Amino acid sequence: QIAKRDGKELQFFSPEIKSYREQLLLENEMQSALQNEHFEVHYQPQYHSATSSMIGLEALLRWKHPDKGWISPGEFIPLAEESGLIVPLGEWTIRKVCEQIKEWQEHGLEVPKIAINLSLKQLLHTNFPKRVLEIIHQEQLNPCALEFEITESVAIDMDHAAEAIRSLKESGFSISMDDFGTGYSSLNALHKLPVDKLKIDRSFVQNILNDEQKAGILKTIIDLTKHLDMMVIAEGVEKQDEVQFLMQNGCEYIQGYVYSKPLPPMELAKRVQFEMIR
Ligand code: C2E
Ligand code: CA
Ligand code: CA
Ligand code: CA
Image (cartoon, rainbow, N blue to C red; front, top):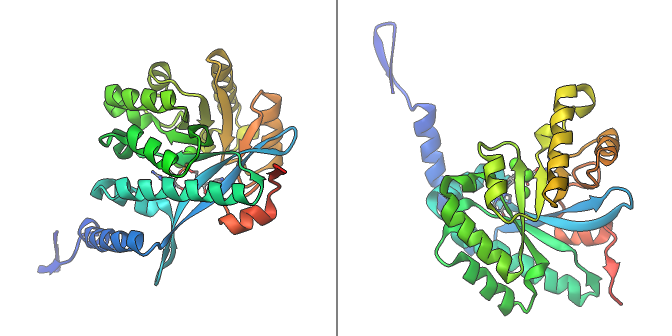
């Protein structure tokens, strides 16, 4: 981009070009981070609000950069999707989660279902359902140990996505619809896909006590899940009065800072009460 100021031509990198250079650098670094195991999986518990019992965990990826410290997935997942690195990175994540489940089980803990986020690219990658099944079998686990979170972005290529999702379901994996209501084809996606659980996006939970319209939408989403016989969980819940509101309106499952932030496995095992098998 060229800009003219005081008759002189100034040349500078536009933000896009600058960030493109940064992107390239990050992409390269991500590649070696994967090889050097600089990624970690943290886990955020999901609770049944009335009994305060943990019903699930969501696996969330973290990148521990040697110089920059922790980099959030909001920053690197889009890049990984663009470059295609999401496929090996996603597979690493699934394997890591399986290993974690095994480790906790060996310590006599009853591990709840663990939800793993899936990018559309991963889902549509050749033989994805077969690959995960292989990983699960290699780790000697049952597919019911895992849930996959998809988003309404699957509507971009609904036929192929639906095929992959059906195949995952047939193998015994659970499917949940993440960020519900924020995409452009929520109802269509729900109608076409065998989804077990719906996650209400944080944007519909925030400020519900002061926003009647939002409360109306929230109640309607909850009603919808009852009609469709689906589980419903609210995410990004930060306040106790939000928990009360959700409970009163039929949403019993809650994920959010009100209970816990995503935690590294060691910390989670220390802080959270797992049921003991023995
Ligand atoms: P998401 O799947 O919607 O995950 C929920 C995000 O909300 C997480 O951010 C979580 O830390 C944050 N969160 C949880 N509770 C609260 C709360 O009470 N208040 C607020 N303000 N935030 C809360 P995180 O970990 O930074 O992840 C961001 C996004 O990156 C995720 O959004 C997901 O789309 C993506 N992501 C993370 N891990 C993976 C992965 O392994 N694979 C793929 N494909 N995407 C991932
Ligand atoms: Ca998610
Ligand atoms: Ca979400
Ligand atoms: Ca989100």
